Amino acid sequence: MALQFKNTLTGKKEEFTPIEPGMVRMYTCGPTVYNYAHIGNFRTFMFEDLLRRYLLYKGYKVTQVMNITDIDDKIIRNSQKQGKKLREFTDPYTDAFFEDLDTLGIERAEIYPRATEHIDEMVAMIKTLADRGLAYEIDGNYYFKISAFNDYGKLAKLDLASLKPGARVASDEYEKESVSDFALWKAWDEKDGEIFWETEIGKGRPGWHLECSAMSMKYLGEHFDIHTGGVDNVFPHHENEIAQSEGCTGHQFVNYWLHAEHLIVEGKKMSKSLGNYFNLRDLMDKGYSGMAVRYVLLATHYRQQLNFTFHGLDAAAKALERYNDFIRNLESYDGGESDGSAGEIVETARSRFEEQLDDDLNISGALGAVFDLIRDINRLKADGKLSADEAESALELIRRFDTVLGFEMQQAGIEEEIEELIRQRTEARKNKDFATADKIRDELLSRGIVLEDTPQGVIWKRKV
Ligand code: AMP
Ligand code: ZN
Image 1 (cartoon, rainbow, N blue to C red):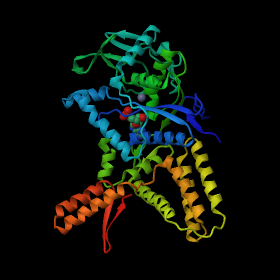
Image 2 (image 1 turned 30 degrees about the vertical axis):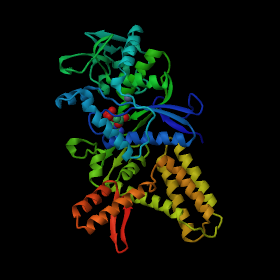
Image 3 (image 1 turned 90 degrees about the vertical axis):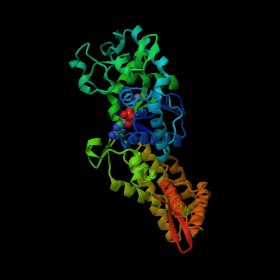
Image 4 (image 1 turned 180 degrees about the vertical axis):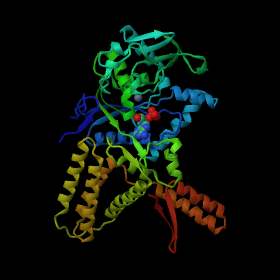
């Protein structure tokens, strides 16, 4: 079976064919850096990591662009509340975002453009849209005229019959009930204070939707393969992106639109008032590992709602332990007498894993194949029926799977550093410097390393 994706644009599962053979160009809407990203945001970013990694597994070259939204209504409000300049306010959250990606083992995209560094490209688009009769100006504000763009509503399947002609919305985010002309450019207003750009079309700042059209086309071309986000992006954000981009170029913008369903917490919408709102750092503070969070965020099909629970995190830690033990034990396995069955087990696992992921990234099916492989090979090993060569091919396969899953806890390299810290701690304890000893233990713990004092000395384990 060939790789297939459910395309929001057509509502169908379709075979994936890139525009340029062997090459995938994709745009993934990134974070708005006015706060730490929450685990719902990371659900979507994790789905995009799976998509990226599986495309690479299939042998495609991938160019992924993820924008950093560093200007919008919320950012302006919050930076002003704190009396900070725009970058002074957004930079720490941008840095935190990249740290969180690392904690979760999310691979880096090729390009992370910032909205505030692409104002010229956005202004050029507004001018083109105005020339084509698709944008108009009122008091220095520019709006997209949706009645002039025939295809408006094709992504979100809007019924435009009830449209009130000429109704306008200035805010970046709004509901389906307010389908209307939307802001491309917002003229400077006193409450914007220091935040504005002097441009050919006046003094002001861009609306949110425009940045993704301008930056995706700059780095990926006017027509590219895949565009993704969470379901809340379908309308208005992605609908507006299509209108702006296709309005400018006169031809198709993106071939495949993929959207991740939302994450909910213990069955409820995540919200500050319910006290069930978590960013990644909250979970780290509770003692969970980035890898366990990765597992939970990855393991549910992206088009199903993900019900995040603490029970699920504990179960993920167990599954990760089983997965990593499997790899470690195969590495140190001496070999036994083959009964000839391992070859088929390995081949079945490989084809099931690929079949499932080819089917619109069915990760739960793929994980089923992985854990069946672990169970069957472990059984052969326990019975002494697995040869060293067969163990090697099982190991090779799981390492290949791991290029997609990213669940293997790397031990090499940092081992020496950990051993050195343990030596320093032992030394400190000898000198009755318990403060230093505790500090070293806590530092290791914050990196997910647990120490155990045994009669043979101190041993360390990775917390899962
Ligand atoms: P934002 O920083 O608000 O622009 O959101 C970044 C990404 O996270 C977007 O693709 C959103 O669709 C997505 N997102 C927001 N909330 C959730 C949620 N609860 N579950 C999954 N994805 C979400
Ligand atoms: Zn976007």
